[in-house]
Length: 102
Image 1 (cartoon, rainbow, N blue to C red):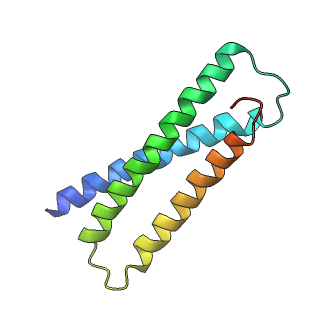
Image 2 (tube, rainbow, N blue to C red):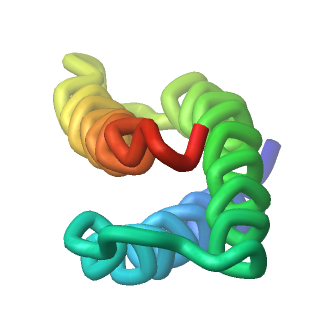
């Protein structure tokens, strides 16, 4: 792979992080909602499914980046993986805590 490929992977990873941020912004206010209408329930379920798929995409892209990264310690990429995965799992767990939905 070329440097351009690394650039593309970084863009794709950035896009996934942006989608994660959008989901966090969507879910956070819902944590205080007492009741959901059918449309809200369906939208929440669909978005959660997308987040679960994005975790897998992130893992794939991050692994490719780690394989291409020339940082011998791998610390930078390891930190990136850890922080992004933690965000994914936190927002998914918050969503699942709306157990009246699922």
